[in-house]
Length: 489
Image 1 (spheres, rainbow, N blue to C red):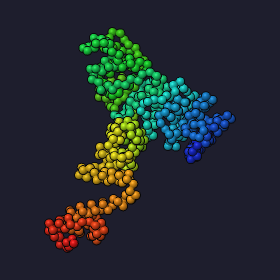
Image 2: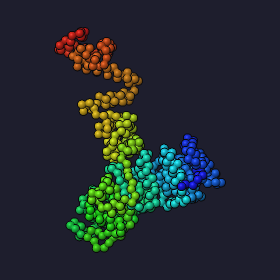
Image 3: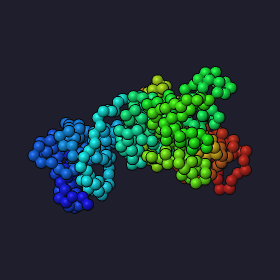
Image 4: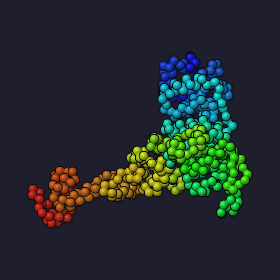
């Protein structure tokens, strides 16, 4: 049971957040004290200390990360919970490395916050490890605000001081290699090699040599000794993607390396000892593969020490706008052009699309749209059916709208001073009236019905717009007369 009479302090410049937390904690019989700046808390903590501290990250003056680092030296037994509305991987890693008890992205469930505070009250010591500070990287970023991605960030943060074996699961294209690289980048092995290998991309008869290397003459074509991926990754991390496709024989060899940290090169007589952290990934259900006899159970348990699941994009739709903006900017950099923006209707289509290829498909889509969409704004008309766009009637593209768009852009460039609708509407109506009269063989009653007008309206439009009636008269003379519809005059 948590201690009674817990004293919880809150540091947040947002008064509404402080009020909600204070109310919830008091209802849970917890004493509270709030501060709007870190500096005010530092003054108060010289006289008394809370049992648990919750602090925001971004605040005027000293931020929450700096406050936490300062407190962990002066008050190492104080459990600190980091709150932030700007949640990303770097914040998560910084929080855990700085000694945070937990990382709580906003908005959060208030009951979860209460339970977390009670859990933190049990915390007596906090292990801090500042020996491996987060460094800059040219790696593609892991982006996301969705709860499922926040759990991924938290897992990476918790493992930042560890070299544990990790199994990453998730559909193709969800960023499993990015997670593996982040685990390496934020680990004690960050200064050593990160060696990736897609085991499904290499023929099974060559994979053994690829992993463990070979001696000269060990098989036809082995003209020299070759160092395998395990030796290349010595001291660092080996990332084995699509591990579920590995043959049973190689599964056995891999199990021995994981258990004993040594192996023989193909054709070799001397054992090779390595210090390698293995991170494996798969889009398969390995537990099911074990039941079906396709994957070794002992290897599964050896790999499945810690599991991280990368969510599919359809389960984190709130992240799609952020990802689109980021990768459209990347595409613009590749093309050396200004980045294109998304019209709200286009964004709505893309956000509602299921993205079976996940983030990888989204990245390719931003590149394609950056090339094919005319102008600087990607509209709903630019979104094809393969990305959830609307299918034009009868399978024909609505080229007239594209033409209208180009015409409008040209008018604005020419800066004629005339309103666009004043220029376009008469021509638009003339075109539709001519087509309707042609279709009805000149019968105004039928043409008006096709247009959705009354006959008098059509007659007035013909007069005001100065439409040439000669083609309609010729069509009417060539067609049988319709009773009750007088000939055009």
